[in-house]
Length: 101
Image (cartoon, rainbow, N blue to C red; front, side, top):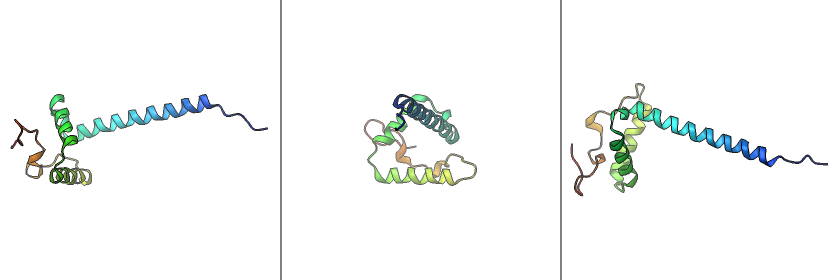
């Protein structure tokens, strides 16, 4: 005769693994914010920048952000990109336009 499966314990184990993965993801995102130097920004400003990046349809800006991020992860010292290499379009728009630095 076959052994019965304990579905409750399997579900608990899966829920525990899912919780651990979510906690690890949140911790890694926090570490990324610190590594980029973005922890010096006000939380409202950081949230606004991230929301703008998510909503952005500008392909050129997104590609620039992608290149800057890839370069950051390839770098040994993991320092933020110099101002000259940051995308000027990455700033939050002011009064419907793009902010310039």
